[in-house]
Image (cartoon, rainbow, N blue to C red; front, side, top):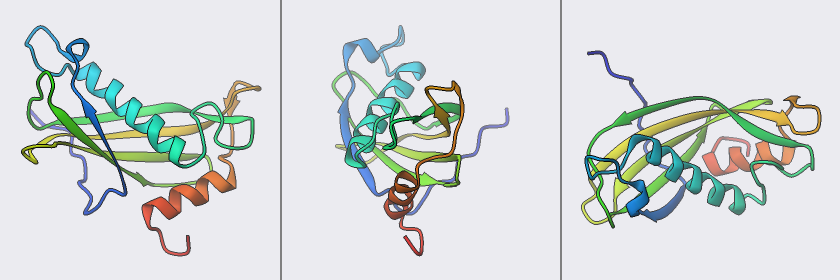
Amino acid sequence: MPRVKIEEHASYPFTIELEVRVADLNYGAHLGYERLLSLAHQARVRMFERLGATELDLGDGAIGIVAADVAVAYLSEAFLNDVLVFEIKPVEIGLVAFRLAHRVVHKDTGRKVALVEIGFVGFDTHRRAPGRLPERFVAALREMAGEPGS
């Protein structure tokens, strides 16, 4: 079976530790695939807080985000009470869209649990239509990513 291929980056500038809770387990007693995305969402909310933004307001009072696509490569299991380090790097930053690359690592062992990429589009929450990302937010993403000229 062909597998999704996600590029692993040399560095991820934002990190946060999140613990696997009982609600995150599936019937196999390990981290459920949909719960991994929920934890990635929690990590993204924290990253946006650091940037002075929220998912509904990237800093201009009008533009938020919507997810456009998701790719996940599962590499190993995670279990109840495991502490996972979610590492995030903004990539493919444009004027209306960007991607967040995640590497999820078990804190104690360093074992990779998953690679995740999520694509986002700027969304005008008032017009209910795609919209241009605020310049300040784009600059913050580029600075976090370590892009030249940021």
